Length: 138
Length: 135
Image (tube, rainbow over all chains, first blue to last red; front, side, top):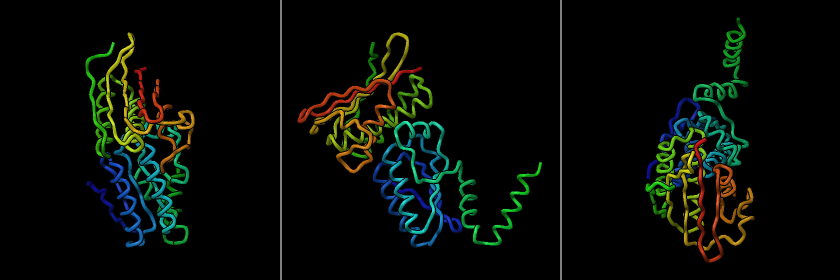
């Protein structure tokens, strides 16, 4: 059985799903991630689904479970890169993924996690101010 | 008229559900369904093929190209010899499940296709036929 690799980047675990997963592969990913969160103490998980051309109810439920489990383990999960057609289909299917935070891509996801974390860290807050200034400049 | 191309996949494992998705995608592209319609149909096929496996104990999936004069489309038949569905209306209710799923497979799949027909009875297996037409 194939296995989805989990990469550690700083305080974040990054998963990029590149294959059409069998149900067992999705369940294995759920277990592997929980173990890696505990083993590494990472505070964030980013799951990139930009390569997935569909998300059915099984994968949707697996993503929701991963988000809940990681929250219990003190880590925040972001699902990033969902294709527009996948989003339309998921909502019509009846699955709006409540409780799952999303971002448009990995880069924005990393920024979002850094911002979450940055609230309590003066260094990051300073950088944040810099970013805001740059954005609001004409 | 139905064109002669019908592909058939026996569904008896997770891997076969993946094969069904891939076949439906290939045919959906060949009849030129829009990207959103391809995505909806492949998603519906994934739900129904999983039902065939999990609730029907395995079965077959047949994918055909169809035409109704003006439009091309795809018809997929999911058949199993499982226990059948006692109460179809209940089974088609959002959130109802006898397994440990979300109860969105059958009801959600129906919303994602243009035509949906179900033929089932206790002890008679289940056959579900769905069709998606090009716009």
